[in-house]
Length: 112
Length: 111
Image 1 (cartoon, rainbow over the protein chains, first blue to last red):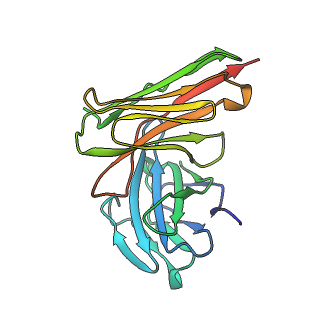
Image 2: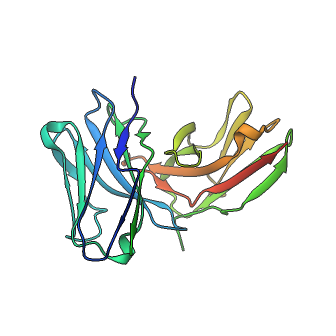
């Protein structure tokens, strides 16, 4: 069974540019989560999808972040415009139900 | 005060040593306690999962929870170089499935 995949693995952009991160969950997992780890800090929750619906987006930092999950399959997280403080590692996780979450390898975002 | 405190290390030990990793927390609503292992350039992987106070053993790993002290531990016996990774504690309250993570402790087991 393939695990959670994320693309790209690393992205370097200039402040003010737009970046889109993609997550492909494990097949059959209705629940998809986004997390972020800023350098030296804890992994923090951003939002949770159940199928294509946003179940909880309480962790989204501001309206420069937009998450979508087309057809309840893969998800994208767009940052527009990116700011310096958006740098960090963005993790995606998926779960079949409200149980063990399986994490992807993360996308390392660097905003210059 | 952070909800979950974890010393980032690094913790360096010789092969075969017993390793003790710890977290403290402040939210008394936490009931489910997890330890994740994260290798470099990989995502966190669930290692151990315990509910409420007590011990749980899985091979060389033992997770311990002391709710009265708001203190959790992960012990690794006979540590191996392959155990070198970052270990993150995480916990959830009964009404939530979203974990609150510690910063993670970097463990280095040298041959």
